[in-house]
Image (tube, rainbow, N blue to C red; front, side, top):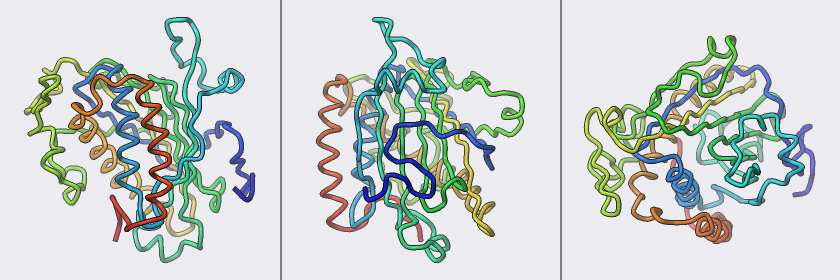
Length: 305
């Protein structure tokens, strides 16, 4: 990277961004017919595969770093008290740094006013499962934009009313959105993304015997777990703030989470039985594949008119 700092943002360090007052706070709850341990593997597998589905023709995902979090970094994390020790008593996790090239992924009204090079989002993520934190920042916009995602994963059906231990001010501002992966795609503006083989209402797993997911499955399914994903969305760009924040919170994010989690479940026969070592090998291969795919072919995946 030509510059270590862009518009006041340090891209060379795995440092956590201070949370500023956000324009919107949304909590998306996605119940899955999995255990949390299964989801840990499934999530990493799904991210690798979904990244390939969204990369091509100059756009997509560029992986810069994927490594264990150091002890020094762990000691400086402001959310350290939320991390659960492993069986040996230590706390660990994986740090990733990616650049998301998004020219085809944003609506045309944003492309029309966006300066050259501004449609890149830098993603820093700390996967300290069951707690994870992801930050999206844009070097052009600096501190006028951030998307901070805190994820907590629990073995319940979405019944925890404050999984993120929010204070009263944030609880008042927060809006909860429940995402049922067996819903109709029209419920989450995903009609054009539909694939019958990735429909949990029709899919049956040969390896686990799970699925199809019928009406009311969330209350009867065993096993079951929930992803509590808290999004803090800030976009302070004159004349576009309300429109863009609403587009992110009410269209882009629910569509993305709906599609990705449907895939994670319907790919269960591909990832079930994999170990963390298997996942790390897959991630290394995916990093090389993504770089090649981004430089070649046509734009793929979710695009906006």
